Amino acid sequence: MNYFKRSVLTLSLLAAGAVYAAEPVGVSIDTAKPGPVINKDIYGQFAEHLGTGIYGGLWVGPNSKIPNTKGWRNDVVGALKAMHVPLVRWPGGCFADEYHWKDGIGARDKRPVKVNTNWGGVEESNAVGTHEFFDLVEMLGADAYVNGNLGTGSAQEMSEWIEYMTSDSKSTLANLRRKNGRDKPFKVAYFAIGNEAWGCGGNMSPDHYADLYRNVETFLRAPAQYRPKMIASGGNDNDISWSDVLSKRLKRQTDGISFHYYTIPTGKWEVKGAATGFAEKEWISTLANTLRMEQHMQRNAAAMDKHDPEKKLGLFVDEWGTWYDVEKGTNAGFLFQQNTLRDALVAALNFNIFHAHADRVRMTNIAQMVNVLQAMIITDKDKMLLTPTYHAFEMYVPFQNATFLPVTLSNNRQYALDGASIPEISATAARATDGKVYLALVNTNPREAADVALALPGQQVQGVRGRVLTAAAMDAHNTFAAPQAVKPAPFSAKAVDGKLSVQIPAKSVVVVAVE
Ligand code: AHR
Image (cartoon, rainbow, N blue to C red; front, side, top):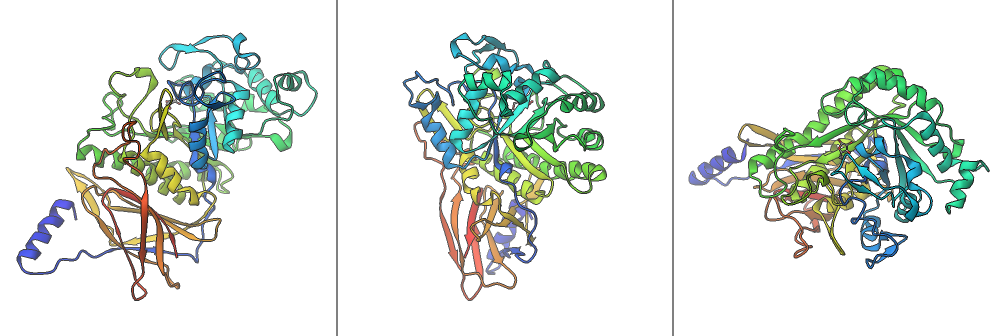
């Protein structure tokens, strides 16, 4: 029943002297049927040489007045550490297919200056290269996901980069790495061969890409203990032909296939919709478009199941998130957008979907970490703020490496507006590495709270304790003048007579431990 119909019903019942009480949404967590482990890398990040995503937002250089460690901003690195970033993808994106790694090693003042042809045509100083990137991930305690250049690179260039990063020998390239300040090999967790080969990565067909991949991967040799997981660059949106062809043709040479899907409020790239000041129509369309990720996961997983029923290959959603019209007055090539409560719900809905597909989806990267698209952090010179999306990630930390638990929802209503209709409550649960059961709930309805009755069959529930993220406005966001406008608040409830009822506020994300 939609909001309007329910309100009419409430009014009619009240007029008739009846007491109206909507039946609660039943949430039942089956702890007896644990599913797969939710790989921590599902909470991965993406940092591309794009706009101020790296330069200014993260990297200021060792001589900057902005406090930094080895050139990386202390404030931003500290905040990212606090949200337990498990993995960072670098250097692109489209940028990766024009990046030549040898431009980014050695003395920084001798590195060639290039043009960032993908993103605003600005100068690329190459100040951030391989060693700087590993300084960042090692400070974060995160793993590295390096994206190779297939578009304008070669098998030789990629194989030399792998040798430079991972060889423990006394080869000339390994010694060059030592001369540049790094004795032991770097740990490369994942290495992708190209990016968006169907578009900015070279406008190829899946079969042409598969031929190139097979050839290049043959030469990417690394010592066993340093061998990265190899990633084939896959499809996007409704196109599952890439997952189909690549899982068939590459299954002996790859660890997984990537997939990209962005949430666009209008569903149209030409006029995507604004990050703030939007009407409820774009609230619901944004969340409805986000929920399309579920079909994408189902369809890609089904395509892969045909050729890889043992599920050896991962489906890696290495770009996802909201993509709005750029903020007025900013460089259109920098993809800077504000980030609101709506973005936090988009993130949480995606997490819930990824958890449900954890048997196949083992790594994802939100686009992007700082100042670009659906960012965790926004900076302005020496100032920094945390976005609502940051808080969603940080609230979901207990789900990293937790064991998925099935949740059954009953009596879940639809939230509907203007012909669009989505389930009001989205839920996910898992047993975390601390042994506790965690539950995350999203109320997509921006107007009405939802009553939830929680049960763990066969177990007594004492209560729940955790945090809620919500705000008065759909587009509530943090600014440098009010950086704490949207932040999590404590949330708890106690069982009465063995029954636990919880009210989930309108437009909110709730993450609790079950006690
Ligand atoms: O994340 C921004 C861009 O979106 C990436 O560079 C590209 O891979 C995708 O089209």
